[in-house]
Amino acid sequence: MKDAFTGRYTQFTYSTLDKDHGRVEERIYTALRPQEVLDESQYEPWRNMSSLVQVERLVTFSDGTERRDKQYYLSSLPAEAVERIGTYIRGHWGIENRLHWHLDVTFREDHCRARKACAAQNLNTIRKLALAIVSQRKDKLSIRKRLFTAALNIDYPKELLKFDVVV
Image (cartoon, rainbow, N blue to C red; front, side, top):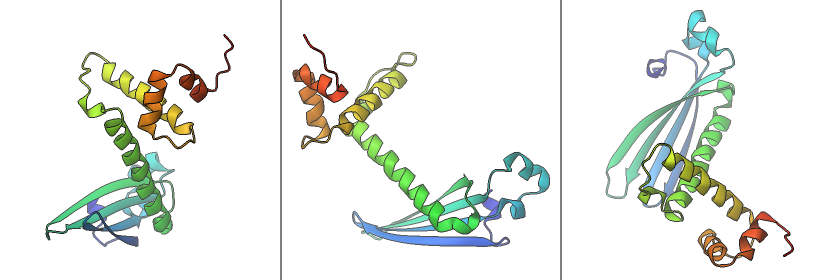
């Protein structure tokens, strides 16, 4: 797929420039029509694919060093909608990064020592469920404080789960 982005085919491009956290990050989104790039036999299994997408990122750090990388995607959106494709790709990574930040910082997932069979995957699922439950609550407490309160107060988890148990 990398070879397709050499300029031989019709390209649709969109670029963004972000200055944040002491670095400048330029993203260039390039989309191609797969029917132009692939022959009929290659394209047939991918009939619902409407574009091939390359995202090239150039990050310049405050000390002047640079990092360049490329990622590739398949999309059901037409290549002409490259701006929307870029927005979706960027939005997806924002969600991913926020989720993993909470799992690592709040639940210290990177320090988990579970190694047996599916233990790590099972714990990850439980953490995501707990995160989803405490995130639904709209009060002034942080997620970490909600979890701490739930550990100390037996009624708080019931509130989070909206149980009305009469004892």
